[in-house]
Length: 230
Image 1 (tube, rainbow, N blue to C red):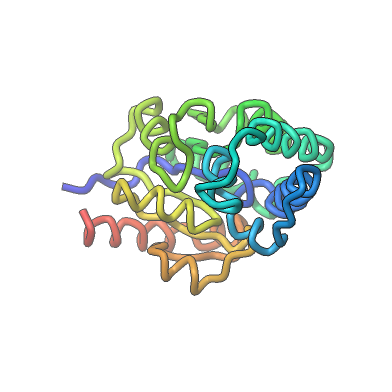
Image 2 (image 1 turned 90 degrees about the vertical axis):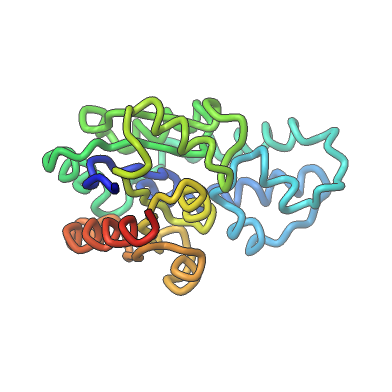
């Protein structure tokens, strides 16, 4: 029997913080440093995967992996330049505080590395209303594998039947769907409403503010989806 929604799992990059395109540019420069000409549009569509997946996805599973660690380090260094400029997306902080005020537990489940996550947390400045935080360092595989979501559930003490996931990429939708968790999509990562819905999002909103303005509707829709699929 499906339980009422008592927790919200949030992706962070592109969902709560405006960082997707900074990641895309950082990866583009990193690839160029190592002689790979990868179109920014392809990189953008892969953002949301962890660094353990993105290189195979963009360079092919048969690429020479000898430079993978150096490539990832280059991306991290290039992205770190922008950490002080990171900003929460419209309504992100208010959404977290409102969810907490309603008795919902806010859980962050992100493919960001721990150092990146710390920068994102400083940007959000909402530690008092975040109950559980996980990063790529806590899981053996990143999104679209559900590992990080499983870790988030285990650490928070919540079950898949009582949570919704909020994310901005198809990788978020896939990771949540692997555990039959309804996913609310946001278009803040540059993915269209149609594509998020096509990959299984229960509902899609423009940004955290739009979700906040329609929170009752969103949770009702997610709960209805959970009842249908549970």
